[in-house]
Image 1 (cartoon, rainbow, N blue to C red):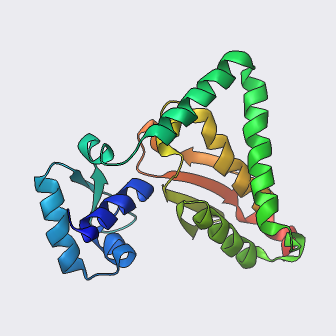
Image 2 (image 1 turned 45 degrees about the horizontal axis):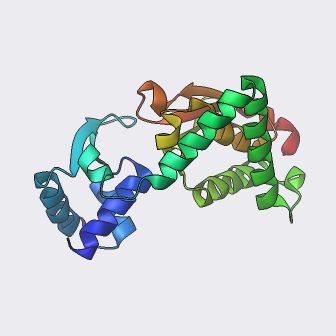
Length: 211
């Protein structure tokens, strides 16, 4: 298999669902070349695709790994993580496990902002910081304002495969978002529930005291 196709597969592994343009940008080749490689991967049964609605306008086509495509990558780390969580869930309460995830996310956020005073940041700066942190943690994220709310969209989640067995892991990104924005957020869609993205809402008014 060519190195370019391997890069395409790795990006689909990390981001779960990508458009041709997403892959062209990630692999740094033109979209026509990406289509050629995708066609070969689809023919080999490693990649599949479907149309996905994305805002206003025509649906876009997104590509994702098939089970055969997933098997191209070592899965031992996923199996180890899953087993560790199974052991934890068998020996501690759900409440304690959730506290562990929450503390983990809080510590992750503090690691990112240790040398800055986020209390002094305005709305736009805080949202930009959130996007930077989530991307560094492996999320593909978009933020948009819809009426009187900000909608934080995760089109890819690094915890997706673990979350299929242990949805408690979703506490991590929710806590990260709440910690950086310093306000509670509401989850409105989740990929684990069959939605195309995970999305959170936070009222614009929640930022009134940081301007």
